[in-house]
Image 1 (cartoon, one colour):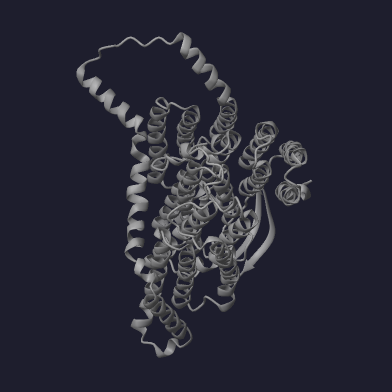
Image 2: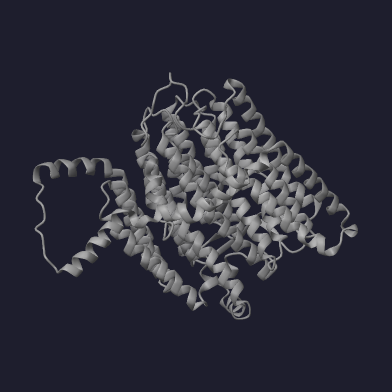
Length: 623
């Protein structure tokens, strides 16, 4: 029976590749393929789960594909099935099937009909990969693709300003969660000196012993997992991205931010519970995060004038309660809570357009103001203060922008001089000297050689931050990102002599090819009208859709999305950084955080947004 287990992962991927070749005018075939894929998946998964439960419901761990094997680490695609997987997979399959059926009529005759269903099928593959994952590496494959699908669906109305802007906001916060999950994987490897599967996390004796002898390492891993879970599930202080994500179509909002994607943080905490079940202080932190989020989110939800943000904040509040249930050990209750909340929010979002019409009609004819109640001056002041804070959404968006992104933009603007000819020549000479030091290590003083990794990683980070804040030529920004990545790879190579040439080539084989292809795409765009400034949106997807697709694939290849060898290469590179080299891992991780943002920003500015030529239709700012 278990031989069909793989089909639940690869069947949606096969359907996605088939959908790419269906003409966009064939709406029945496109939607029918998505409905058939999710429907067959739902039926087969239900039968499989029933037989699995009758057979005793034992946990299944299947080692599927070996991607890379080194002396101390082994990167493989592993699948795992237990009651957590069963609940999340069945609910996910059911709701995706229902939304696919609904979208057949809801998205009918939209210009992006095929694009929408392609992304939904790709999301379904990513979701199943994440839910069925048996280790962190497999989970991260689904995690990354899920983030890309989020970016594409929030910016579905890509000719409008706000969807494009909000898609960048969402992916910015998502990328923070990606980096935290990568750091958790990095420390986990150095702690255990091997790749651990989720099945092994259930070994309470082993993890309990590690919690006593390596408390700070376990606490660091747990905190990184919590931040990643809080980002994905929009918990404080990252709650503000969820209502901004509602700029996409209502159906994608229902499946992503009402039911499935927003509950991935809950899944992550359930799956990694073995890491932190012995750390009482961390459990208290999880409870505090969930409780504070529930209080703040429900206060904001009551003051929202639009239904979709109101539903979003209500869902955030319920997920906060799920965090509390998991920390207290009520995992079965959390699973029931997830199933009920996911189904309810999907229903609410799908009917929200009709409900809003009925409520407005009822308010117009039957509105009666509430009578004023005098509860005392002190209570009134407290109530009004709470009201104003909730009305401003507790300034979460402003604080996030001011304290998280603005400082790095300021640094990027200050190092703008790195794009000059003299600075470029100096950087090339410095990189060449670094390669010389790599091959001639014995001729370099030990004190000097030990500082080189920090110097080169810092330079790489500065180049990436320069690109992140650049408002000039897109080709210069693209080259800055590529150069920053090369400096970071060189820094790790100088840091660890065990970082072999083959492992370096594995990383560069994907990113360098993508960098060259992306540069050619930008050059072709600049030939059109000699203007690819990042100070505005150009909207070239109107006239160059194929070129835009190629450039998007190049962007994903640059950031190491799982379909390129760079995905494995980045994991190996991080593993070669020792756990005591704090500054190096900070420079490298922050560099990779802003590298994706800088690259997707270039794509958004050049190919998305309202077209700058006046004879194209002018779209509304909002969806």
